[in-house]
Length: 268
Image (cartoon, rainbow, N blue to C red; front, side, top):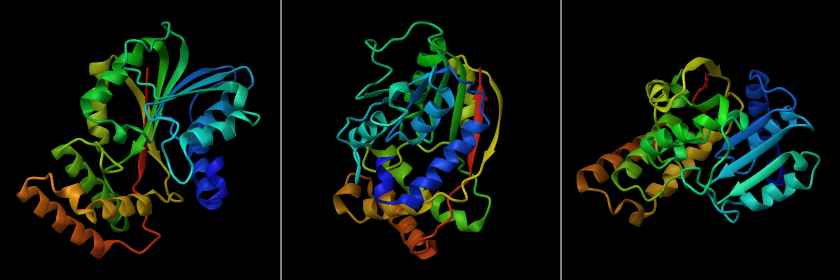
């Protein structure tokens, strides 16, 4: 992964987390996989390894290749494309599966994967429409996301950072924060039947090694520290957000904040 040159330990832990997820999924060699919200390809690489030389991964993201820092999506994709997994991967950036021009034959994929990407959707409605759109294209759904229910007190800072960003976005959805639409596992389970999917399994996912708590706290404090980012909020909500930011500053550690738990839901 291209990001390994900037933070090798973080990249290794992120890859290990995704490898552990895929090890529990039934993705056999030769599988065709559609990955939504592929980002820089952390999960893409693991899926391509599982699919084997005879498989393929179509990795889709609405962001353009120039998006991302310190490594852009395009730079990361180019690194993967140049390696041994490259022939198995088809990156498609700037692609929205809700665009009628984007289409695949019925049953084109054995699996569709959404891994730690659903909180970046603009709204629950957009996620619902996306899940319904891909339903005819794949037999199985593998879904993993952060869990809004903390297991211990040292995960509260990550939770607060996520909820603050969600409130700012809900008031005016312009994508200012890193997280846009945080929702619970229970909300996802209520949504699936509306989209033609039937949940048939799942459980917790270990996040003990991950740095996302620190990353989201940093993103939240950066957001709150930019006056224009909160200027659009109604005054009562702005004051509520600022008070929550005060609490976040008080409870967050300078670094090493424990990430929230995560969960897996499987459906067919």
